[in-house]
Amino acid sequence: MAPAKDIDSELAAQIKCESISFIRELALKTENQDAASSWYIIAACAFTASGQGPLVAEVYKAAIAQAKDDEAKRLILRRIKESLITSTFIFGVPRLLNAFFPLINSLPSPTLNDNTNFRSSSQIPSFSSVSARGEAYMRVVFGDGDLDSFLQTMEEYWPDLKNLIVNDVYGMYQAEVSVLGKVETSMINIASLVPMDCPAEVGWHVRGLVNNGGDVREAEMAFGIAKGTVEVCRVQLRKELPKVEDVVGKKRLISREG
Image (cartoon, rainbow, N blue to C red; front, side, top):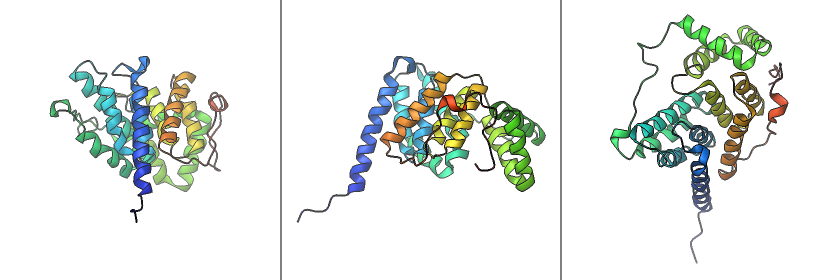
């Protein structure tokens, strides 16, 4: 009798094959040839959130294949790492680590490493400064109406949650713009939230992208890469994603019902 086939192994191999093809298609697009292009940070976050962290290494390899020199390759690595750590509050540390080890093992040479520390103890501002930066950033993303209600609810029911979101998520990470711009941060938020099946939060950050100075084309780019990733990774979404036109320009999206 022939041994039974490992269906899970076959599916994993199929997912990897289709994902690499999808990544290469993205990398070869004319508009994605620049080292500062957004495609690879969006894809890195989408694959990590989809539970396919090791494929971030494939994103990295495809991106540096288009790079002109070693400095461009280091920039790509720096931007991928910043996108992942910024989005960790969405998909979690275990999925970040699933991407981290294959990523560093895929470096072609030690000279291409980038170990810049953007949040060392000497660089961290005071608690009050971080809190103020976080709230100011959130006010642009969410708007006054939604943010004031959101902060009030957290203050009333769960102050520690408010501190986490305002100080750590936004003040320390999301509002840091030395590596990624504000629009790019919104794009990776969208890319991370789509595979996590969080349509309400996707809507918040699509609106936030435009509030941060982005446009519908950039929101649709993030959506497109995230949806393509979900498809090749066989992620089953149970909730309907919002349409860009249904959330952009709306003053109130956040409610206590979630």
